[in-house]
Image (cartoon, rainbow, N blue to C red; front, side, top):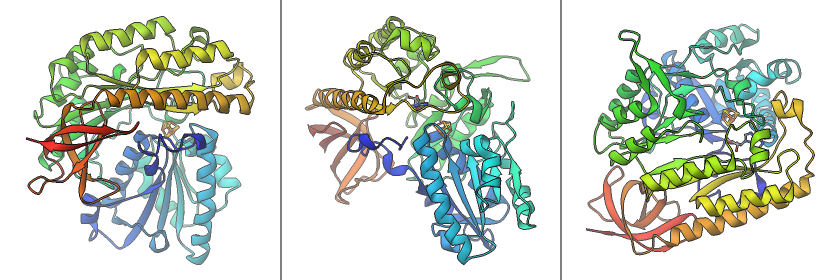
Amino acid sequence: MYNDNPTLEGLKKEIDESKQGEVFFQGEAANTADAGNKHFYIESYGCQMNFSDSEIVASILAESGYRPTRNMEESDLILINTCSIREKAEETVRKRLRIFDKVKESRPGTLVGVLGCMAERLKSKFLEQEKLVDLVVGPDAYRDLPALISTAEEGDKGINVFLSREETYADISPLRLDSNGVTAFISIMRGCDNMCSFCVVPFTRGRERSRNAFSIVAEATDLYEKGYREVTLLGQNVDSYKWENPETGAPVTFAQLLEMVAQVHPDLRVRFSTSHPKDITDEVLYTMARNENICKYIHLPVQSGNSRVLDLMNRTYSREWYMDKVRRIYEIMPDCAISSDIIAGFCTETEEEHAETLSMIEFAQYSMSYMFMYSERPGTLAERKFEDDIPEEIKKRRLQEIVRLQTATSLQHNQKDIGKTFKVLIEGDSKKSDQDFKGRNTQNKMLVFPKKSDLQPGDYCYVKVNEVTSATLIGEIVD
Ligand code: 5AD
Ligand code: SF4
């Protein structure tokens, strides 16, 4: 869910690029229309965690009488949930703020708030330079929003970017925005302690903390009862999930949590993201293999295929160690799909080292990848320790080579599915035609197939694959 790489059009469009900046909502949110008179408008950027946070924000605002709107011109409160991961993401947000400025001019009294990762990073800049911003609220301070809005209404700036060691919003039931009523995200932890040298997340989202396991299971159960059939457990590094039951002192690991959620109902699919290769255990892999409803798909970012670069990135594994992990996954689950995040042109990367990233794509047989040019982020270890010395042109060319190889690898991966039949969870109409459904198989591949009248979104069906592209399987329902 990242949208700041201009060279990736095509491949990524099929995945989730379209969601960036998405204005909420449908579904559940529409039912809150009578909750009050004031309206809020929210745009979200960045990762799925951020989109999930917007649903927490919406829930908090609904409690204090705000109702959501898709139309920023009629809103009393314009919010932008921001991302800092690459420079491009921040630029996009700045452009949007200029547009909000115009709305504010034509509707004095409208409040504009910056939420999320940029809020934490750029609080003083927003308040001093970007005069139009009334609220700056970091990812751990959303409970404070109603109070901050009151402060801003009185003409002061509402600001809270305090990062918490405890906040998990465990008790807040997210207001499902832009919901298809079938698939939902559940945040299971916040923050990150990994300190990858390129990454700003530990600074913008703070220390890692895990959410109460019972509240996660309760949220999954509630979603199932409302008709949802797939949940994705979200965290920056889900495999390091660890929560201790305060009453018994018994720890719950990620593998145990997965099993608990899988037991909510056999018809509730469970996915998770993101895994750090160093933390995913055999216990997790066996738990996946044992439970039919835990999807056979792992997002296992490699970042680089070269051990020296991995060391500079502080990833704490080598090329060989990662390859062993991939072998282990395929050994335990031969049909599991693996995807990756890849960075082109990290500090000091040579052509030979870049070639090792290319060969890793072939070795791991990724079903797909999110691919980026390295973008230096202020405050990170890499910014302080290394020179961003790979020229833009070279980064671009390396990225293109990575994208080209990944596209070909995805196509081959999909071609192997021709003639196979998959169990598919129907998510809704396909993008191109309301005569066709779209839905995913266990490997997280999107299938498109002609509708059948007795089926609807939320139903499972079996689809035989007839043809493929690098991003989609095209088929027909079979009995
Ligand atoms: N430059 C480029 N890509 C980055 N990512 C994180 N930080 C940077 C950066 N500074 C990528 C990584 C990560 C994904 C979420 O974004 O691949 O896994
Ligand atoms: Fe962006 Fe990272 Fe923040 Fe997600 S956690 S919004 S990817 S900076």
